[in-house]
Length: 477
Image 1 (cartoon, rainbow, N blue to C red):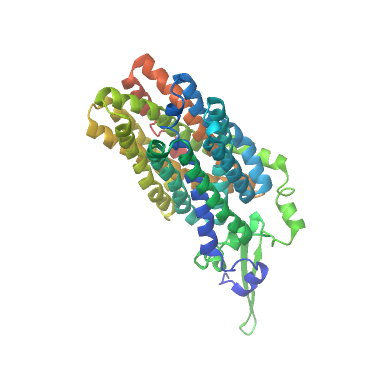
Image 2 (cartoon, rainbow, N blue to C red):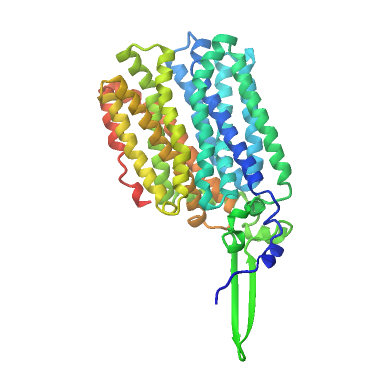
């Protein structure tokens, strides 16, 4: 007969289960990841009004290469990022990512770096840092949050992306006009440095705790670990009836994951330890061959291809049809970012609801693709400024409905489809695939959009994206 397990015996098996670091440790980790994503995307977008001013004689093609170089390098570096997250762990990789991001920002801030070659190099270095920021940051959140809280946590972290994209162009233009090109990059460098201090506090707090035990170490009282909801444990409670109504209760909680000081057993359970790069590579290959993961990655490619197309084309469209100047176009485009900022936490909370935990994320993805198809088609087919602004809001909302639930869904696939032999490597693999899909979309977007508009006109572009975004396959994930 199954009964209530003894919390005292379980705590004795896992001394890190309750150490008072639950909400504090998780909040600090979430803040570090959100701030890192904010700084990364702030650096990505703050240069939009700055680069054309610093390089007035540069050709449009050269500027396009400069803007695309970050996404290209990010896509290339996601493969080693996945392996290193599985080998070193997300905390160490996130630390290195912030150091590289600080180097990139500092290089762009110095006056000598305001030449095309230096800017291109700094942009490529930022791409390498970005691959580790997203992969290690999301892997860290997947490790420390249980499945019923991941959606909200990852939605809050993706809010840092939205905030960086929203404030980057506006802040870059204002600071450049007032103080020149050095101050914007210096402010971002300060944000990265402050985030590095917070990460140092997190590393100090979790020193000596392995990645496998990090979830238990940061568990809070609301996680109900005593009731058997901790990941990596099994509970048995055997009650035996004996003659004379005597009962013997064998109540035991046996952890599947070893305590941090049991290095030999941890090494065997993790497929040779975190230093086994072959294991990380094999997990990445399994992730790339899983149909569900590939369908989610395809959705991310499509969504970000649409955004990558719209960023330059919508600017040209607003200038041609509505005669808007630069700051007016920036304000109109910020409507899409505002929609994304609103959608990310809401979609994350919905993904955590009991009714949504299994299939809800897939429906959110499908709904996001449907809304995206409507919004993109409306921009170029309806010649009305209010409708165009409403369509941009729908596009931002759609991107939030696609980006945010895809992260906990990929974490679920990592646990259930890639196996629990090396959970850290599994998380690193799926989030590297996710970040590669996003980067690939931003590489393909401008190329595809430019070709379609030059060949068939803006209406053909709207029809193409609207047709391609129809959510036929997401429900089969």
